[in-house]
Amino acid sequence: MKTNLLDFDLDGLVAWCLTQGEKKFRAVQLFRWIHHKGVEDFAQMTDLAQSLRSKLQDHADILALPVISRHDSADGTIKWMFDVGQGNAIETVFIPETDRGTLCVSSQAGCAVGCPFCSTGAQGFSRNLSTAEIIAQLWYAERTLRQERGVDERVISNVVMMGMGEPLQNYSALVPALKTMLDDHGYGLSRRRVTVSTSGVVPMIERLGQDCPVALAVSLHAPNDALRDELVPLNRKYPLDELLQTCRDYLAHAPRDFITFEYCMLDGVNDSDEHAEQLIRLVRPPHGEPTPCKFNLIPFNPFPASGLLRSPPERVKAFAALLSEAGIVTTIRKTRGDDIAAACGQLAGDIQDRTDVSGRRAKTIRIHA
Image (cartoon, rainbow, N blue to C red; front, side, top):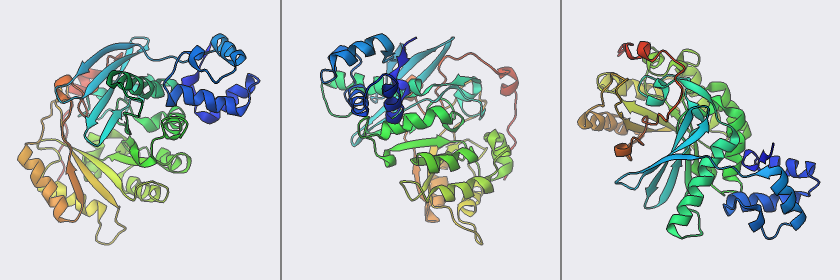
């Protein structure tokens, strides 16, 4: 069986090349051809020795993921659905803006966390993606967008691990993919422009700070443990006090001096003035250590199985105003790609259901002030 070279960060590719009797500088050349230039045909890698190109033809591949579908939004957002085998598909979203191009990347087929406001979680969990399957999303999108635009310079300036899945529950595959994104011989992205979003896997946040610190976003969604237990079930294992302390510790290694807290606005569930006041006390306790942070308020994108509603715009603005008045940087995320189901919380792919979805639909979220 041939080796898929997308599975390796640069250190991994160096190690593989050594097993093939090749020197380190050949791995650097090969890495640049694959990721910096987006070339998949070994015959086109003209500065590699012919003997190496022949060896690569026999023993290696650069395997992109098969594209099932592509949808283009009226606002310029693009969503691709990729086939990852065994009846599973994942989704990847490109969001163009005037000053950046952001790619939202998936890390799992499905998700095991089971947040009731997320359509991915409602589908259940199938499996982790490999490093090759994670980086192939960026490899394909960057290559495709350059070809379509007729440019040689980089189109994707930011990557957010906010697609399908909980990235930190697929840690061993995630970190080599992150290192490839950051490597100057790969995609050359700044650590500030690569963001890992997590629902709060505390031990893995600590490890990420040591192994590959990038920008961190935490899906908070509730200001107290009782409500967060319902909205983010992982909170039952890693409650808020423990999570926030870990976030503060992470900042010693992070490329930014704040944590982004994501907060999905759910009508009548977590959007009251009292919930906002609780959030303020949570991140700026009167007699405790504050957590340097900004809040990103996310309008909920309804889907049939959730039984939940989006907070009205005026409620979201009032909620944001309370946080801002307390001196906390707060933004309201602009919904992008909702006409192609590419907005936050809408990615569901086409995955084999591993859960009793009917039971989950019947679940009632208890509201705790």
